[in-house]
Picture (cartoon, rainbow, N blue to C red):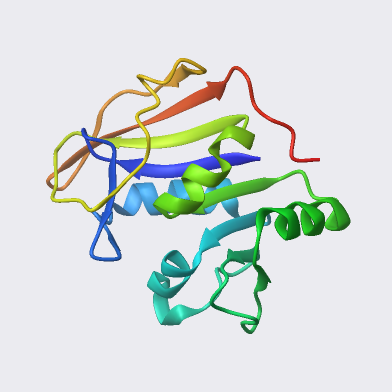
Length: 167
């Protein structure tokens, strides 16, 4: 299981149920990493998707106790149910895509984190724990800073030195 997110300098990930910034290159990177794979998200993240529709060409899982079913989506009400489903479907290519609560519940099970760092601070009400300060996470790849319009960003990858097994 892997985690993917875009963060600002304070590790903010969202504000008022929206991404802090929509950077086209980051959207392309997200798509390239997750296409054809399993994506796990919470209810708010699902509701923020365009048209509240599942991401195309991916198995979409929503971790929620509110929904019982959604068209084109697997709904799991608990981590136990999620892990059971993941074992049954036999897929290893799994990405946790948000939001804050789902990241916090699943990051200890993630082996890697693909983080797009945005060089700026924005008003945020949702955060990802700062992996630079986490003892069990190590940055193993750090791309060069790139520029797109007014944004500076870079792609990084972290390794969890002690991931828990969900199997």
